[in-house]
Length: 482
Ligand code: NAD
Image (tube, rainbow, N blue to C red; front, side):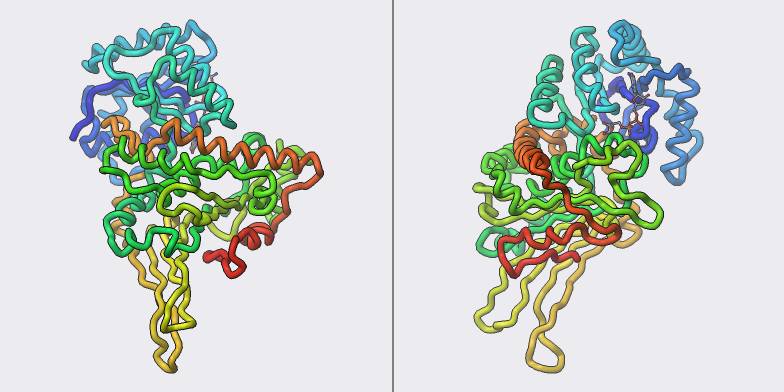
């Protein structure tokens, strides 16, 4: 189905995100016939580019990322792009932007529909939202706002930003984007849980012992030391990606598969999110900083990182709910830079228990998200020789051809915005709860810093600080991926 006509305004149109993700994603939608011909994109940034220069950049971006490009298709696509030199802090610049949007609206017959995309440093989000409102940039049709992460740096700043945005956009028009929700295996969690009685019936505290979510990165902070030192792994990865995954794993069954019903089920779960006390943080949250490797300095020696920085490049912790089918079940998470390999996976550990076989192992269901998409069931089987049990893995993996068909997360999510499908975007009520949890840990860490308790140092190319092995409630639990 082709989406409805619109003028899209991208703030940050010369940036990395626009180049690597947004332009290729829009092109893929265009050539699949999912974007109507009556659309225009206005890219804005401070540089004095011309429309033609932007179109050249858009073509470069598409050529660098997409395959099997039809040159005529790409030429046609690029004609829909317009550039407006615009400093988001200058109020008068919004007047020129508004005029261009109106002109393009008429030219492409866009029915007054606008999509605004904030693809810039988050410190500008509030300013842009305020000026969209006071300079009356809204169109006469629908108005939708896409906001990149991070949405605030704690509950207070997130709430302030939400209010600034709220002056122009109601909750139903705000699309807080988290590209993890566009990933194939993340979108597979609900069908797996609710379309298979095999899993649906054991998805509760009676059978599940714990869940482990690992998002490991192989790279360090590289040249982004200045940005990263202000953020850290907890804000950068846990507040959004990890919490979204945990929410999908632990939420109760939605009444149906509409966006509203799914968000309602998520919020029912999150009302029972346990906010950790200082003592709980000390016991079950571990933070770390990577040491030097052969070719890269230790985190604290990275350019623009304070030498006495306490910012964590690794964090492991525990989430628990009093609500939902997994009430009381510990959900462990860890994420870090400079780990052994890039890997995103979920391990669901079932309680061991067999009246007949004393030595039965725990069943484990593994959902691997990156770098490959696969699901593995670890089962007990009979030893060929002898009377004991051996572990067997049943694997359901996507083949190379199937993997090739998987659209990029941004492609899926942009299409969702066109189609006004908010299922895979973060609702404010969800985000607010995530921040409350993050704030509690940040507060505990500030207290630890004041007592000179620093992050643990960890060796690169491994699994992070050893202390993370001791956060489990049960003495016999361990990280399945190790
Ligand atoms: P970037 O620094 O590459 O781009 C920033 C853009 O903002 C540039 O176009 C720049 O010219 C413009 N800009 C800066 N100051 C301006 C001003 N005063 N007025 C107008 N324009 C101005 O940043 P990015 O990597 O593209 O990231 C953008 C957003 O996307 C951030 O919120 C980031 O967290 C998020 N994000 C980026 C990626 C990625 O892969 N790059 C991935 C996920 C999320």
